Image: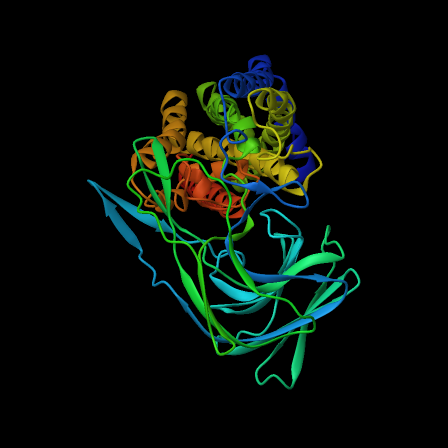
Length: 502
C-alpha cells in the first residue's frame, strides 16, 4: 500500500483485514445463528388467547374491528338519498389522568381518523356489528367520509352545524356536505365490499372509549373508560317511508378493566322532527397492539451483542499488535482510514443483521402461529409486506449502526474490554431503565439513546400500551437516533485520531 492510495483500494485492504481473522468471521456467523435460535425459542414461550377472549369483531376484510355506536335507522331497498342537518354536537371533556387506588393512569391519545367522537349518517348491511357500511360524519375536527372500517376521506374542517347527505346509486355510495343545505360539496365516493340491495340507513352517534395506561417495573396494563357524545339532528329527509328505530350496536367484550368505571348506553328522543341522539363506542379498526414481527425479532438483540464485540475488536486489535503505525504510515489521512473501517464494518454487519432478521422472521413466525397468533386477531405477516420489509431492513441497519459505534469507541479507548463493556451498557442500561420507568416517561430515553433503535423491530404503528418501551416511537425516529449516535461517535473518534500520534 502506498501513500495517496485510492479509497477503493483502502476499502479492499480493510475488508481483507476483517475477513482474514477467523474468529471474527465465526462470530459474525454465530451472531446470525444465535439471533435465529433465540428468536425461535422466545416464540415457543409466547402465548395469546385474544382470539378466544377478544374485544373485537371481524370486518368485511376479515380484520379485527370495533363497531359500537347508537344507530337510528330504517330499512331501504335499492337506491336512496338521506339528508340531515347535524345542528349540534357535544362531546365529553377530556380527562388526561385518572387515579385508581394508589396508581395514576395516563390517558393515551390516538390521533387516527377513526378515534374521534362522531355524529353522522350511515348505510349498513343490517344492524349487526362488523357489517359493511359507508358513512358521512361530523367530528370535533371536521367532516369526513368513511367506509368498511379502514377507508377514510377528509371533508371540510368545519365544526359548526353541518348538513350531510348520503346518496346510494347501485353499489356506489356518494357523500356530500353543505353549510346551508343548498350548495353541496362532494366529499367522495365509496363502494363498500358487502352492501346488499336491502340495507339499513339512518343517523348515528359514536364516542370511542378513553384508554388509560399504567406501566413500569417491566409490565403494563391498559383499561378503557366509556365516553359519551350527543348530537341533535333535524331536517331529516329520506326518499322512502318507514319508521325510525334506535338500537345500540355493541360488541360482546370480556371483563372490564379492574377499577375502571363503566359508562352508559345510547338513547334517542324525538320532538317535532328533531332527534336528539346520545351514543358511545368506536367504529374503526381494532388490531391488537402486540406485533408478531417484533416478537419474531427479539433474538436479534443477542446477535447485536456479538456484533458489538466484532466492531470493537476490529478497532482495538491493530493497537494491541501495534499494526496501526503501519496503517497510518501508508495512509497518513487518518479520517480516510476511519471511514474505510466504518464502511467495511457497517456493510458486513448489515448483511449479517439482515440474514439474522430474515432468518428469525422465517423461523419464528410459524412457531408464533402455533402459539395462538392466528387470524382474525393476528393476520399472518408476509416477507413481502412493505411494513415487514421495512422492519427487517431497519433492524439490520440498527445492528450495523451499533457495531460502528462500538468501532468508534474502540478507536477512542483502545482497550477491548472497556470498549465492549461501554457499548453494551449504552444499549442495555437504557433498556432496563426504560422498562422500569412509569407511564410514557421512557420516551426521552428512546429519543436520546441507542435503545431507540429497537423501535425498528416494529411493523405496526407506535403504541404506549406495551411493556416494551421501544414500541412508543416509530421505526424511522428510532433509526434516526442511531444514525445520530454513529455520526457523533465517528466524529469524536476522528478528532481524537488527529490529536494522537498513533
